[in-house]
Image (tube, rainbow, N blue to C red; front, side):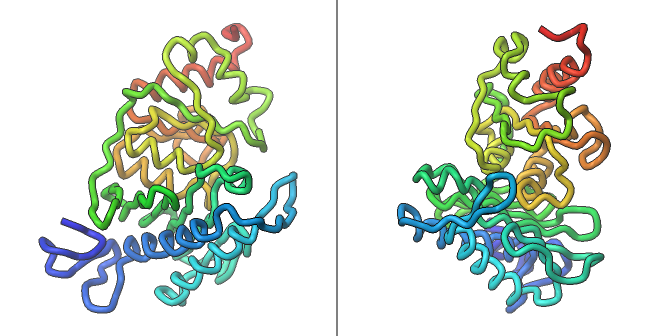
Length: 291
């Protein structure tokens, strides 16, 4: 059954917010539609000479970021005109305390994209109260869309949906090496990569796009590790929701509930992988255990 399309098995009803059939889309369907709209723009502009627009900390956006965000916001405003939005390029709109807020990252992996690397993702997530209840991460170049309605995690390929199944079999762990590093010097991701305990069990990957977080949910990565404060993060909200719905083990950097304590993220395909990475992280904070 294709849940997003409301095909056979649910009598046309679809959604996680009590909406049903007819002309009313579910939040999950809207997230997928918006992510696909952004991905289409990213794909169309790929390889063109694009102006760069400087941001803080040496970061930048391109016209592809801006155009993809406009396409996503057009979909969200048409479907949910009363909802608030936080978008990577245009910032916050709507009431500050809105109960429903969309989190939009129109092109995660801008530097990759600017040098014609296809390792990018388009992230759209909906926070209702304190929970992400719908999310989608689109890969513009594979055509895949990883999505969740807050309970199920699926990947859409060629109009068909399949369940996401996490597995640590690859032993591949993506690590975010980009700043900021709020937990330094107690934790630095680059130092973890040199730890003998890491190299004995895992192999590092750095793709510099949160598409890799969705890959944990899909079983293509064993885990993802990053420092940083991730509450209402336009970059990470969708991937975290996918991992949770898929049954991954997801915590903050030191094993605390997400969005509490020191921040950061360990999203692992299973509890054993998570425990091993958590031990490596904690060992950095204990000088007597450092290699």
